[in-house]
Image 1 (cartoon, rainbow, N blue to C red):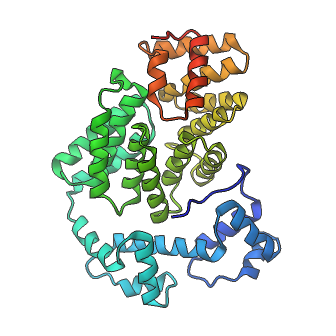
Image 2: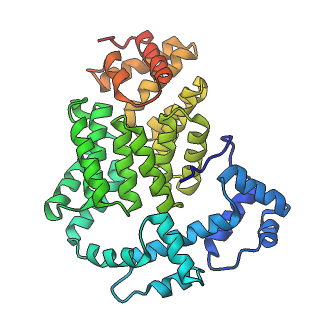
Length: 378
């Protein structure tokens, strides 16, 4: 699948935002380019250019993608009496054969197969669903206490439903967080278990965007960016309007050193959901993208706001420390480093070098900054 991308990290034009909001509220309506251009207050040709430059697609393709995603949600929420035909027609697909073909091309299965599996999934133990659903926002906090709570809830869910993909994915990512961020002293000891769980979850929840997003995140922290990219792109195809999916898409771009796309994707998250549990992680991700691009003052500002709003994400202060060094504010860097070492007393430069899957240049500048600020080398 082609990756959505933009050549710049500037915000979406106001007219394009208005059109996107209108389209989301009128998915069943015919697509009239002149009408959309009037909403955007631009010429039709300009609107087409905005879709191409900022979203990498056309108005019709964008709407078709959302219609498919909406149809899939309805199929996944349906009961045994639900009809593929009724759902297709309700989402603007008058030609059922074309609907089935596009659906299969996007999701790798026929609509009837999704509906059949939905009936089976409905039989998952209610308590397991409750526990896994409670664990998801805790996992997205990326903080020690919430991480441990998510692990406990996901583990209890799996006791009741051993083949539950979402719970398995939560467990995989949170065990990966323990390892990558040294939560509660776990360091790298549990990384291989996170990978094993992630692979299992990918098989169990291959049709679920949230499960795939969590699995991709686990692969990220295990330095398996190729596997992570493949899964997050599938998640984007399944749920193109999910801020949770775009948050992890943005972080993967940051890990890959693609700062412009990382910032664009994470800004999109802040527009879709400008509050917790995603806000602080989006801020920190934007800060890391600025650090990768050598914009250290911006990196420090974004990360400081993210950590201040959610102190459990103290791990990001490693980057804030290095950013302060590269800004030339050594006293500020040492102050942040002292705070880092109070929260991570066993942190060393060598540990930081192996923890995160950023490019070598990012890691070299991070470690140089940590050492200059007083973090022990070994």
